Image (tube, rainbow, N blue to C red; front, side, top):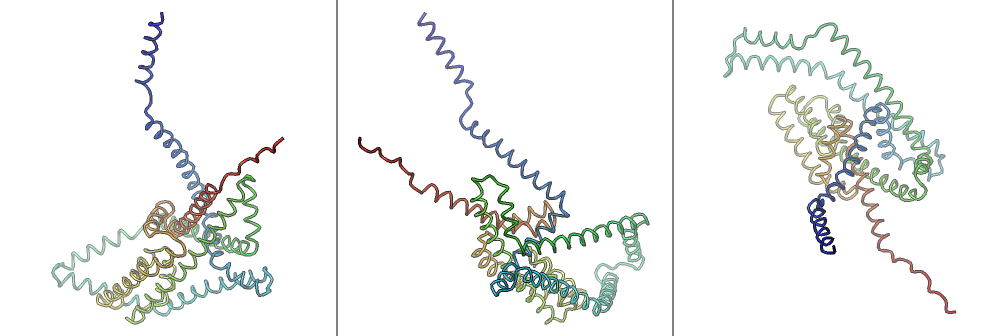
Length: 379
């Protein structure tokens, strides 16, 4: 009987060992379902942000504007200016700067667009002459047929034109509404941002509020440093490319500078892409040699940004690696287009600051010696 029990125990142990799940599979399974939950939560958050983009995008722009101008409000408050009045002054200054740039661009467009249009017409005529007399040897009939095909592609039916006009009208309406949402949100963030943040922290469990508050403060410092560094880099890019355009006699110099300044808020690639507009204008207005020199100037400014400004400012103040910036921009473009590219890098900077802060606090917590219970007093 005892031998039979031993034999049965051996058989049962062999069966259990045969069908036992390996430790590696157990660990991989544990990681897999956790990663699936995290991915589903992240996808849900992204979907909600995109679904409410008419609100979330202006709020994000307001946060960036607040990070840029909160120092001016605090400076005025330190000079015994009431915070409400200081907020009004800073917001009005922001509006004056914004509409002032638009006015400069509009004024230059209105005075130079006719010359640029004439240059475009002349350039098209030169291209037609080159295609007719150059190595292609195209006939007038072939050129006319290609031009007619291009016109037929560009031309649309009345219904599609009406649809496009309706879409443009809806876009303008959303842009105006988003502008006022961003304006009012920035005003209240500047005026009583501490109260708003305290209310957000109060939504978390009591034992987690200290870490949430400290993480938020760290993220805000990272965001403020990033925005200020980005503005400085954008000013350098815009000044360098606009000066090169002015020196080469390229029209629309101020408009090019404003476009490069706005495009440089997308780090690394923004100034390069917006600078290509200057190259195109130079090609149309001055010819290929001027366009070539303009391209060299854009590349030189981009190299200055990539190898001097970005590593020094972003690496020292924000501590975000250039590879992480590229990946964040690509992910932002995939998720939300140009707006996603604009917001992705500040978000990466904030997350990087939060992770570093939580990791440092965790190490400090683990390094603290455990308190031993008091020894009992002798009887």
